[in-house]
Each structure stands twice: as C-alpha cells, then as structure tokens.
Length: 444
Ligand SMILES: [Zn+2]
Ligand SMILES: [Zn+2]
Image 1 (cartoon, protein in one colour):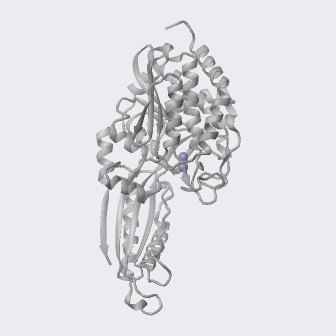
Image 2: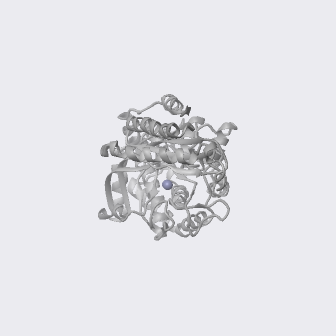
Image 3: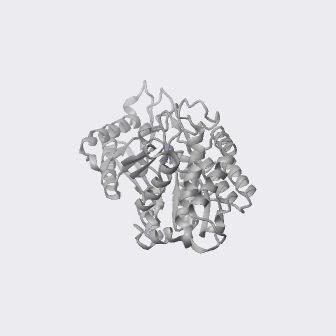
C-alpha cells in the first residue's frame, strides 16, 4: 500500500467524482429517458455493463435476467462490500417521461441510483482506492425492485425463468450475494423533511397477492339471474378489507392497497372473472401474516355473498428493512462533512417496502435516502430537480462508505461483522419466503 491518509484518500475520491460530474449526470439523465420495467431493464443493464467495462472492470451480466455485477479486489484479503443501484422504473399513469409502449417511468428515482453507483465506481477507481483497501468492492446493478407487473412475473415463474418475483430475493436465491458481507444503496427522495441526506430506522415489509373471483357469465340485460357477478363479489371483498382497517394497530403500520387488474369482459356480459392484486404491508413479519389472514377472510366473504369462487394466491414479497445503525453513523458523518450537518436527518419507520429489507436480514445493510427530487414518489409529478444532489452526491457517499469499511485492513467492516448476528441465514431466508407461497380456492 502506498502512503496516504484515510482523509486524503476520501478527498481524492470526491475530487475524482467531481471531475466526472458531467458524465455521471449524463448517465442519470439518459436512464431517466429510457425507463424500463423490472426484469426487462435490458438497455439500462447494457449501459451499466458498458460503463463498468470502460472503467477496466469485467462485469458479469444477465444475473437474475438483467443484473450486472463487477468487482475489484483491494490490496489485501478482507470482507466484501457491495454497492447497489436499482435498474427499474414503474408504471405511473400520466407521467410525462414514460415509455409510450410499456408505460414505464422513473417515478421512484432509480435512474439516480444507477448514476450514483456508476459514479462511485469512477471515483474509487480513478483515485486508485483499491490499492489502499482490504477486501473487495462490488458494484451491483440489480433488477426489479418495484414489485408490479405481477401477472407477467408469475408467468415467468411458471416458465421457470425466475422463482421469486423481486430482484434481490432472486439474486439471493441464485447465490449472487453469497460472497458479499455488507451492502449499501442510496435511494433518492423527494421528501423535503429528509433534506439532502437521511436515514430511517426501518421500512415495512410486504407480501403480495393475486386474487381471481370466478362467477358465471350471462346476458347482462336478458338473463342476469343466470349469472354470478364476479365484480360484485370482488366489490364485497374490497369493502370487507376496508372494514377491517379499524382493526389494524398503528404500531404495525399495516398497508393494504388492492387494485382491479381485470374488471369484466364486456359491458353487456355479467362479469364471469375479475382479477385483483394487492400487497399486505407491515412493520414486522408477524403483523404482516396476521393482517394477511384477515385479508383472506375478507376476500372469501365476497365469494360467499355472491355464490362465486375466489382463488387467492399469496406470493412472497419483501421483508422489513432494518438499517445497520453503525453503518448509518458512518453515513451521517460523511454526509455531514460533504453537505453540512443541518442537511442530514434521521427519521423513524417508513411504510413503503423495499427488497433491500431482504438483504438486511442476511447481512449488515444500509439504505439511506438522499434528496434532489421533487414531486410525489410513484407520482406523475416526480422529477429530478437538483442533478448534483440526486446523481453526484450519492456517488460520493457510496464511495466514502467503502473507504470507512475497508480502510486499515478493513477494521471498520470487521468490527461491524464481529458484533452482528444475521436475522436469518440465507437458507432460513429462502425457506421463509417459500413458506409464504400458497394458493387457495374458496367456493362461496
Ligand atoms: Zn418505488
Ligand atoms: Zn424505489
């Protein structure tokens, strides 16, 4: 190792990232304009692969369909730290920069994650950081965090192309995190109260459900008495879910938000089939499973009232996220040094879900938020307002964390790992997710 101080290395990484700022911003903007849905992010994955290869790395592509992973070894052996960026967009009605064919839009700012990830690689490599670090750095572009497009994903699973319907669960299943010891990604936020950088204590987990009400089609004018109206059965199921809401405890942070994905075949036919999707989110696995039992009961009630059938498919979703507070402290210190202490915030529990929660069960994980966006997350008005804060500053924060963890024979990472107990082993994780899967056909 050449002679430098940790502080000097951090400064030269930040300077390298600043020199690359235009390139990093251009990547973030290019990805913003080519939004793709999960497990279909082929253009974005190709761009990540090309950019990592231009930096002299040897990325491997096609991991869980579209994931791209590259790594670089430090001067000595030690723990492996993975920096993640999510590749996907989601369908948001009316978003001005949506793909005209798929409806995909970057209304969650994942384009900024990709810019930050690639920028971190630029800074660390251009500053020659690996020569001063122990262990390995992994740059990982990961697919399909937004858990939507469910019918298509279920079809992919039936065809054997995936098992789990989210990107990180699938990467965990395939073993692409088996050699990773710690992980971090930075999510863009438009919440003004987070300011430029913030860490939440935890996030909701979720399970995902598809629901199919099966009635009997008949002439809507001439013979409705011959039919069984699957739409009304679904309506009663939805009303029953709404009636349950007063039983959800505030501290469990339950969110149930069904949509109708198919409401009938045509207007002069009594709907013979109606399809719904929903999540059941909550702060703990126990709370999610308890709410899920109630939701199943409510869904059955719709079938019972109408004499219809309901097929309820419960799919593994994402586990609750627990940020590692030691990594959070390192992040807050770096962010305060770069952005000013009054730009760094701490918040409590968040009711959204992320498959970084799954990662947080098997290794020390950090999922902070950084600003630069405006509008409503998952809304049509979501936009990047400050490209430097959204695209360039996260690159610095990922890279600075790498130094804090892997400097000095990786003493920072080793200390975190020494005192950390996994919430689940990888095997327990896979077993739990598989235990969630079930399909029930209820005949009302
Ligand atoms: Zn999102
Ligand atoms: Zn997101």
